[in-house]
Length: 210
Image 1 (cartoon, helix red, strand yellow):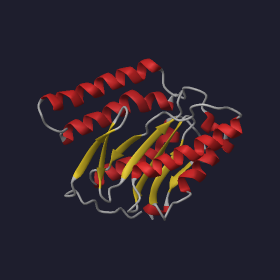
Image 2 (spheres, one colour; image 1 turned 30 degrees about the horizontal axis):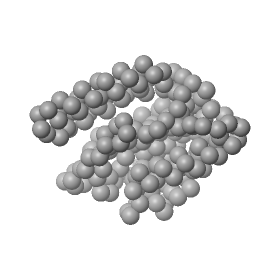
Image 3 (cartoon, one colour; image 1 turned 180 degrees about the vertical axis):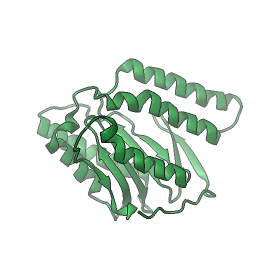
């Protein structure tokens, strides 16, 4: 596997979504997590948001942006508060159905090599992970909107339901260095085994990792 060397001198831009802060960098690599709308208990989300907001507000009160250490604290907080619950299999877990997982995979890979390079991916029963690098001029927010909009419509149709399918806002992590790059790839590839899913077919490397 070949790893692209990251340009750590590029300026990192921050924007705020409805619930989460997002960092953007030209030609950056991102690790994305998205989940089904019913995959987490409300109290778990509320505790995570409270602790996350405390970190962000502390930096604001000091009239500065988040430090690298604080960004990493946010990453660890997401891992400790959110990912452990996701792997426990909360909610309806529609993505465990092969026909639903296939719709999501097809959406993710539809513009692979044209709008983005996929490095690693995994579709779990109630969430998915993708590590990718957008190909300019295509932006991450547009890519994610395309995936979610198409897959939600098709999955709802197949399930015979209407309404919210995905949570409102995916979690995105900008990969900061080569160690982080390796760690993110390994986490994604090992996620099914760590969640006790044996012979799980919905995981692998993309062409961006070759």
